[in-house]
Structure formats: C-alpha cells, structure tokens
Image: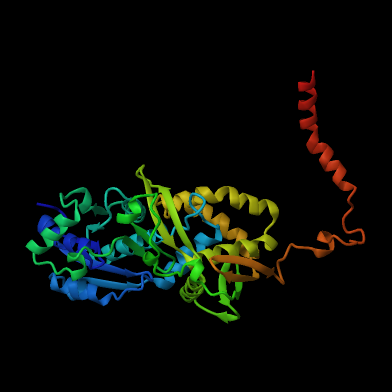
Amino acid sequence: MSDIKKVVLAYSGGLDTSVILKWLQDTYQCEVVTFTADVGQGEELEPARAKALKMGITADNIYIDDLREEFVRDFVFPMFRANTVYEGEYLLGTSIARPLIAKRLIEIASMTGAQAISHGATGKGNDQVRFELGAYALNPNIKVIAPWREWDLLSREKLMAYAEAHGIPVEMKHKQGGSPYSMDANLLHISYEGRHLEDPAAEAEDSMWRWTVSPEAAPDAAEYLDIEFERGDIVALNGTKLSPAQILAKLNELGGKHGIGRLDLVENRYVGMKSRGCYETPGGTIMLKAHRAIESITLDREVAHLKDDLMPRYASMIYNGYWWAPERLALQTLIDSTQKTVNGWVRVKLYKGNVIVVGRDSKTDSLFDPTIATFEDDKGAYDQKDAAGFIKLNALRLRIAAKLHQK
C-alpha cells in the first residue's frame, strides 16, 4: 500500500494528463488534486475543470490559476535582463515557464497536505528535469510521480486504448490523430515538435505557424515602435504604460504581424539527444534586440562584456532546470545590479521578419558622449596622441614573440 494519500497533478485536460489522472487513482489509490496554470497559452481553461469533475475530482481539489503577470514579471523579465539565449538562438520559451509551474505545484501541495506531485513530462524530455529540480529545491521532502517513467503506455495508441477502456472523455481531434505536432505555448512563445519535424532536413509547412505570418506575407510598410525601459524592464510602448503581461502580449501581436520571431533549431537536450523544434517568439525577439540597444548606451564596457561572458552559463542554468539553484540566484543578483542604470527608450523598425534599431537615448544614464565620439573637431576633448602609448604597451608582448621567431 502506497504511503501517498494525496498528489497534486499538473493537469491540462488533454489526453496524456487525463489518462495520468485515472492512472494515479488506480495505481496509487490516492486523492488527486489538479492544477492548471494559465501562463498565456491562449486556450480556454474551464474545460479542464469540467473534465476533472467528470473524473471524480471534487471542486475544492481543482486549481486553475492565472499566472500570466507573475510569469512575465518574475521569470521572463529577469531572464531578458541577462539577454539570455541558449545555443546562440533559442530564447528559452518553454524552459522559463517550468520553474513557475513547479513553484505553484509545491505551494498547492503544501496548502492541501499532499505528499507528492505528478507531471506528464516524458522520460526523453527536458521538462521532467525542470519540474523535478524545481520541486526538490523548494521542498526537499516532496515525492514526485512521473508516470511516463513507470507505466507501459508508451505510445499514443496505448493511451487511447486506456482512455476508452476506462471511460476517459477524449476530444474527437485526438481520435482522428490530432495535431501533427506536439505544441507548448505561453505568453513568451509557442513551440512545435514531432512528426513532420522529426526529419531535420524537411522544411516546416507554413500552415504550421500560428502566431506569425511569413516574412514574405508581412506588410510592405515598416512599423515604428518606441520602447521605454526602467531598470532593464520594459514599462511602456509608444508612450503607453502597460503591465508586464500586457507588454509581452502587445509585442507578440506586433511581431507576429511583421513575421518576426520564427526559429527552426536542432538543440542539445539535457538527456543527451539532439532534438529538432520550431519556435515562434515574436515579442521576445523584439525585447532582446531593444534591451541590448538600451544597454549599449547605459552600461559600462567591461560590465557589458562580463554579462556577455556569463550569459551562456546563465542560459544553460535555465535550460537545464536550475532556476531555483543558488548559482542562478547569485548570478541574478549580479545581473540585476547592472540594470539600475538601464533606463531610457529605444526605437525599432519592424519590417518583414526584422527588428531594426533606429534610435536610442537615456536622459539620465547615457554614457555616450558626442563631444568625444565625434568625427568633427572635438575641441581637445580627446587627445589622439594618447593612442600611441596604449598601442605600444599592448604590442610589447607581440613584438617580443615576433623577434623570438625571427631568429
């Protein structure tokens, strides 16, 4: 008999988690609490409540939480303060939502007295790592049930058969094969994996993309956007103050309209395999470009270079599930300390898949001094003769080595 009496399940109401719900009830003979997170996936979440009720879950054991503002404010924005990119291209849209979901799972487990949490991530993927590392960091005593590592329902056909045998309601689209892709969406991005995309040589169909038009189909007229920053975070668009979630939603709308933010990537997963995925991150693409632009005039050179040196490490921490680890928290403190002077505005031009910076300024924190940088007469602000000294000093080791090899 299991010592697990109650478990909190990360529940979407789809085929996988609906099967998991019944499987938990039968296998562990336990009470199940369902948790459905609204992180901006753009889907109606109330059907998840209705399905959970049909499966015998009591109303007080069903949690559907709107986490959109917390997601952008406390996870997306801090990540973008570091200009975070994984393996040169990926803006970590899936990765950054997982620590928030893990946090809420642990909170609900504490509130309801549950001994365990459960998720629908497979044993091949990264999400199992992100959920579980986050959970253990926040509650070292929590038990984690990962059905995909325990059961033998390792195909869609077996899941469907289990659902039919146990009277689990499944939408017709699942019975007809469903979407050709495995998709994950939140306010930052939407990802596509599987089926047609499992051949890395095959181009994704244009009909697959949901948020963005193709650059070829984007408007012929460019659109200008003014983006205002305070302490490294966007606070206003075109002079209008908005909440974090509203800002990202608006950037997604504008970026999608202009074909911005598509990515086709073969990435290296935590578990060791290479995996091909396609991503749409229109708002994040604009945000990254604009943030680097405002930093270009407000950050000290060596501070900016230090951030660039540390960024790949920071990106790997997020990708590999270490959001709650002490090294990520320490690095975040350093990053946030650099953002105190990142204030001002950036103007970008959106045009056929491109984000083009066309202006930036900071009234209070700009380190750009036009009297020094000018190509005209600087009236003695910079003595060009000084350049000879530092060139000579920096060339010394090179000259010594060159003379040695001349012998």
